[in-house]
Length: 273
Figure 1 (cartoon, rainbow, N blue to C red):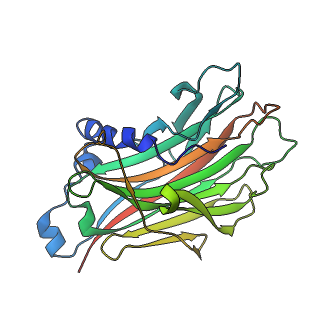
Figure 2 (figure 1 turned 45 degrees about the vertical axis):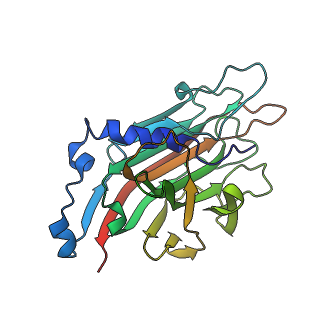
């Protein structure tokens, strides 16, 4: 029901180099100076919505018999100034689609900083087995740094909130782990609702530690490191991600769309002392 973790990141890492030659130059080059590192001055990036972020089709996909393959046309991200809407299975087909909207920053000194990221997210509908228009599989998010120069490992953390009302794990919160080649581990429970929730993610590369905080509650998280194929590029790139996966249709089919709202993101780069 769930595809293997992060085939899409090969595309994301490649997209970083392209992204930073064009749009959003202030974030693109992230003019982070060595002098500022020595002065221990942090950098801040922030936004009300996710305008300027990239959107790709993720690997959490499924196509029922008789349907055409899942494609980027099945997902969309729209911006409304004060928040953004991520959508998946927008044509309400008998599929499962994965929308990954992410902000990449290409910088070879990304590992010289402790990264603290946050944003707010919400469901604009209540998951329910009687809802024949909207239901979803998950809301997800994460932060990663890809080292394409030395170790060729992808370091980071991620969370997954299961919102499928037919799933026995409904409401479970999971964290991403490197064990067994990469898998989700249940770490808590958040009852699905339509309230705004705030997530804070912290990655401390040097100490190999992470933090995951949702609505001021600390949940277990893991420092993950994943080797990638030779097709990944030779850059160092940090990524902040927001994601949704539409409802798994099951044997009988369930042609509903999924969407979630995201807003008020912050990303702090704090130099090590």
